[in-house]
Length: 273
Length: 273
Figure 1 (cartoon, rainbow over the protein chains, first blue to last red):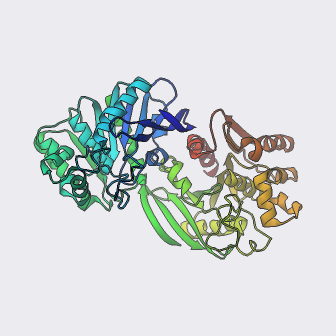
Figure 2 (figure 1 turned 45 degrees about the vertical axis):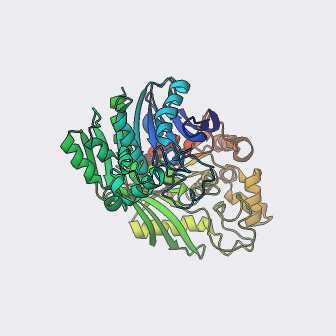
């Protein structure tokens, strides 16, 4: 990996780096916070639409919470960049910074937008080889909350804890998800279901530990895009342990995330250790 | 005041607002975090070069620290904006976002760049009238650390606590300071000393409580611009209580500020209560 920037922070270090991805066949940016001393586990944070690898590291306040732990946090970028794919920069919810963490099957995205593989293979390999880490968990926000739920449910043995802030829980049934899944996967709606946490639960995917979700009730995307109740209902039906906390007055921003991050970090630490 | 944006955060609210300033004769932007419930005191945070009222609120993590207190924090913008003064947008260290918190005496800045008065009069009036607050303290970073030291030393009865991160302690003797003071105050070097914490201490200004400074030793501006040792030496000579903590490896960024903010907040809370 090539280190681009490094900052000492809460005794440890915040690093911005780039590595070559086998999955996307591009350089991929990421950031991480590694507390001082030996680490033995890592939380993967997946960001939402429009974000880079920087937003979470700057705004969430995770460093203070991980300072005295053996757990680092790594924040991958939200898509490959610099590909000059026609149309990929035209909207905030498709293309650059909007990968939805799927393996695209449609041209021209299928060549590089292999973000499901990137997270589950390249990022894991990086953590294993650069940091000798063998215990992982995953969390994310909005599009990244969707990514965390889908990746966690499809890989329950790899990720010891799964949680999400304001996740898009049922993308096959909301405008953001339908646009992205159609663009990356074409009309094969059966294939879409592999990237929908509600559908994955329906067909038997399950995580043995409690999944944690936080949702703000003043979130402007809550009613139309996030469809939070659907994962609550399906989890109840199929017996997936799920805590979904809804809080009055909170919106979709990092001011919401930073407020509830301590609870999520605590949940992850308890399952990583 | 006109509220532009509001976010619930750690039970309280982060607000971005604008009010009309008598001192600058312009609208001025500011942000604040007010914890839930009754507040009786306020910390004024002064930001550094290039910042707006947003940086601290987004990056420093103050909300978590003030959640269960009766103390709010307010972050004024770093200069008037939108004035179309020729040259005021040409460099990062003079003009827009670089007021140095002085009352300018030179044309064309003297008409609006009355930022010393803005902080000590308009912001205080806002806190008193909108929030019924009568206990104040002041802190800041870099140019804002300079502002906090100067304003605190010149108004020791108004500000119960004074602290700074990586402050420009002796602007009359560093390139940033000389450029700004000459631009805003002209060649009257005696006038510059009213905005130099070392010079103010020399002529008898003093704060009855300990002043707290944190400085990172990997700060790229430390040796040439900040001149930290000078305020340590002068404080010792004149009997100003000062703790200046220098920490290996930390730079000039918000990753440094967020690390040491808990200590500063604790210092301010102890003197505000």
